[in-house]
Length: 35
Image 1 (cartoon, rainbow, N blue to C red):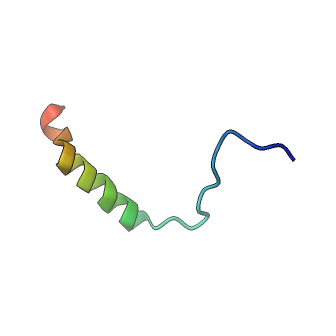
Image 2: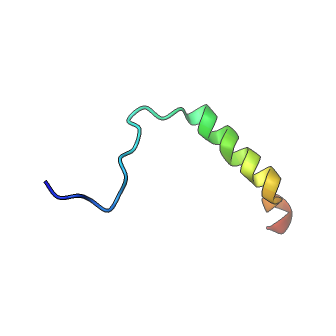
């Protein structure tokens, strides 16, 4: 089997945690104000 271009992903992602990380990033980078 050859190595793919993509990294393996978690088969059971923690969506609430991912959402919190996204919201924190948006707040830190002031994304809403820039849009």
